[in-house]
Amino acid sequence: MLRTRNQPEAPLSHPSDDLAAFIAGLPKAELHVHHVGSASPRIVAELAARHPEAGVPADADALSEYFTFTDFAHFIQVYLSVVDLIRDAEDVRLLTYEIARDMARQSIRYAELTVTPYSSVSRGIPDGAFLEAIEDARRAAERELGVVLRWTFDIPGEAGLAAAEETTRIATELAPDGLISFGLGGPEIGVPRPQFKPYFDRALAAGLHSVPHAGETTGPGTIWDALTSLRAERIGHGTSAVQDPRLLEHLAERGIPLEVCPTSNIATRAVDTLESHPIGEMAKSGVLVTVNSDDPPMFGTDLNTEYGIAARLLGLDAPGVATLARNAVKVSFLDEAGKARLCEEIDTYLATWQRTG
Image (cartoon, rainbow, N blue to C red; front, side):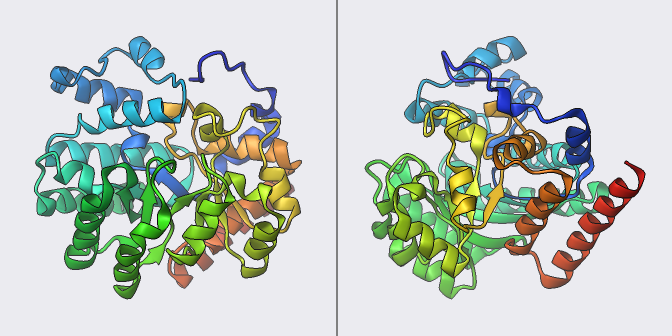
């Protein structure tokens, strides 16, 4: 596993063999996972070999060291260097389809993939070609792999209001078929949420859902801003929510889920250790939590690993893990018929496991 410098292995990351096997085959939905951040080492190495001038290692061992982060700012720096490897529509299509292939291996049936079109369009890929590439990969993934992909287009907060305007234009005027929601990522420090209100207002008016990141590396005030200014329906990360009992109560009463990414929070130093991760306190407060991988290869994880960590932190057995999976489906933006089918598949899988296990 790739780790932050000086971070020891966490004993909580290893569920029992039986539970790990159950998780591996469990049909799942993922709601917080990034497009470029899901580039596997194999794909990063291939793209780095295509574009050596980018300075990203094209060697697996060197990539392991390259993906070791000192803090969140360093993570953003490394992340953007991988973004620089995506130079044309062929790169975009390759990346997107290979992400779906990795998801299929993990029994992920549905994913809301956070895509940052501004990062690619601003680097010279025409917006139409970018959208055609992800849509072609989306259709092929569903047809060939059985993985349903939907898009969250997010504003890279570090790029400012120009990026917000361009992201909103692409989302509302070009609106690819797979697009369902609108987000805000990147650094939180120095990037106040209220300034993005006009852009979220336009996206919501166009029928998109609001799913900004908030409260990962800043306090609960950022989460309140996301709720009040951006009308968030789910919160990306929300790690600091536990610092404000009134906020926890509000999230629980309103049924606003948190998209929790345990390993990511350790890798970016948002949380010190898995043992101190606040997911347990969130759940005990009645907040609906979903478990996600964020930028899995960069953090040396995948969704199955994150489910194993959550099972240990929350004290879950197989039926409890199945409930966790069902919750993610229920708070997703999948259509109701799709939700019913996936929940039924989860129930059938659990019943078969209990009968034969």
